[in-house]
Length: 222
Image 1 (cartoon, rainbow, N blue to C red):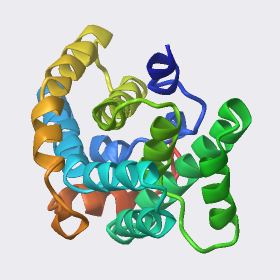
Image 2: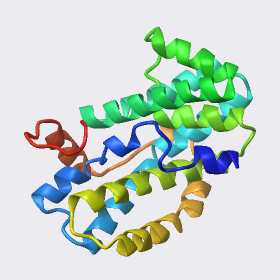
Image 3: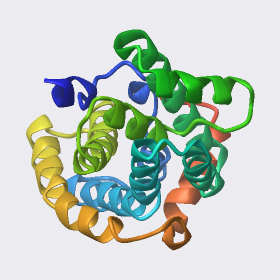
């Protein structure tokens, strides 16, 4: 039940307000049909697995070891690898909201301590690290936290696609099903990596997210 609640794609942490660059991709024609949409979302989840996913696992293990300095290193590693303003804004807003929710709902002391560090400006407070701390506080497994992060990203983007383009909701669910099928292999790869191994290469996605910041008309936040 805890996994269902905190893995819910509609968890009120602000995901509904962002498209992860998809809005610009639709506007410029990079995404224009179900096939191009699936390629774009798959690129995002693979990029996430090799960056956010690695940091999430590191933070989860650090939380279990009660190592705040290690958690902070993972947090900064995520933030420093967000190349554009939109991605940085998204991860810190969602991270802080999730931390605030955990303090209120779970009365999680460790998450509360981390939230205090965020408020003092000593760490950015990224979403993957917040997820790691919350799932550790719930006594769940790191695999669960990784899966929820990957699912949440794909679900967020596909939910946005239904508001941005002409798309059958059944096609969106079929895409989500196929992309979710890659999460287990992505976890196995990320689980043996360190923060130094965090890397991604998706220049088109990064450029589109940067373009979105200066767009005159937007449905989603930057």
